Image 1 (cartoon, helix red, strand yellow):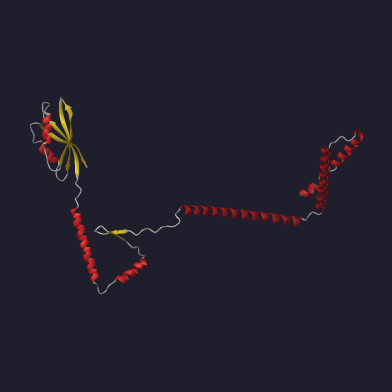
Image 2: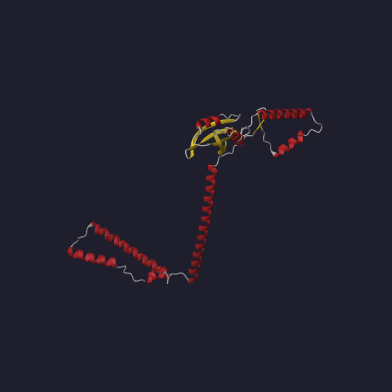
Length: 273
């Protein structure tokens, strides 16, 4: 049973407002009018509602009498299903459009962050041996091939010889300049432990003997006395040497020549500078 048939057959008391109105008039005749203007307006609204209900009841009754056939109902159901399918497909198309629009917005944001125009990089400068620089010209591969074909001289020229001479001269000047440039001097920092014979050795004299050793590329530094044991102290002295001129073997040999004060010499630390 359809909703229209159900409403048409349902028992509803649509006449109640009329009975209420008749009851009100009866009591008014008995007791006199006691309603205010607001009550009268409310009754008018109730009457309008009752009339509307009556009209609805009549329209529902008319529709139930002229209800459509099962074939028409099936057609309506088919049309509703087709509309639902179309609505579903439209929803899918809208979702796809939203996804594409979001991707497009992301790409536009990235392009807006990047610089609007890429400035061409300046051509690298080529240094000459005499200190001057010449801006190198950027050439496309096709233009370079055409230029190479134009530069071919089958018969030779004096300009090529002059260019070769100029190139040789500049290479020679560069080699001479490089030869005159001083090289890096390798240096090392050495810490020596100089041990005396006993506790009666004059350590001041011992240090004077050590510092008396002089050589090209040798520079003595700070020193201190370090206790060894039984009242004996050793001299710990630092020096800086040029590796090509002074070595540890040479220092040990020169210092141990003072046999009256020095027993032995050991290298405590050796660091490159």
